[in-house]
Length: 403
Image (cartoon, rainbow, N blue to C red; front, side, top):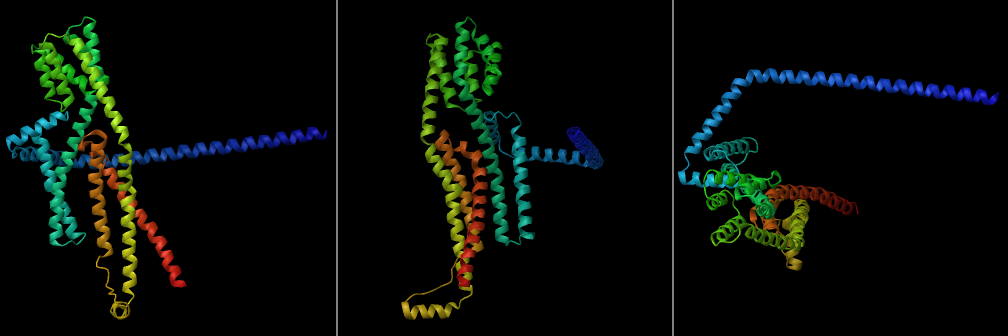
């Protein structure tokens, strides 16, 4: 009887717990639904407001866009024809099909707007002197063109690397298709698979040119004019020489493919051997240089505070009379040294990135993508070490003052 009553009480307790948990679960579901309804209505309300303002400002936005585009084209027409032709070839290497005048005009427009904006902010917000405002405007002007050059160079290197990486597989596939009995046109067209990326598009263009009546050697030479790759140029020359000397094209393609693969394997081996040097440069830029500058800045700050609380004339006179020493205030200001440190870190990051790109890929421009990363990391580490060392040195000086 006692066991039955105990089981009944246990069953009641379990049912109560299940009921309470069910109520809590339903309450959470209801709250989640209410929250989701409120959130959806809030998003719809914000979207409605934005749509309302967009409809009001839509004519002004269209006018501003058309006005900006017209200014870009007009600014682009002022460049000499030889510069526009050279820049058009550069864009062709990068795989950009847009008008060169438009891009040059866009860069020219930004190189006008950015210096004016930087000068206004420097003069009215940061209260800089006239010389510093002019210097800031000049740096902003030059920076626009440098950034444009860096972006285009990075796109060229990325496209070239992708083409050179897939070139041996493409040549081997074309050779196998020709051995299977396909014509050069069919072999080129079938081998242009999507996984080959930009090279597939160029091979398809070569196949279309040959179908239009252009000789194969001329179509291949035209392809090298659209791709900045010494390997591709050398490959095309060997193909043309092999065909003109009466050699079998599939055999020539297989030989070129094996030669490029062995060259790529040797280059990968060289990359692995230079990894230690690249890591040392990265460590120096990200941690070594920021640590030295942070420690130096803290020493300057501490000694400046100490000298500000001392009578330097009396101390210097006493030191000169007794020990023949001359004590002078630190000629470097703390804020100036911090600014100097940031400038040096930016410079080190810039040239260090280019050096790493040269060591890893044999090209200076291949290090351009890591420039902003190194600059951000080195400056962030510098300020973090500033805070850490300031805390440590403040604790030491406070202990010395107490003792």
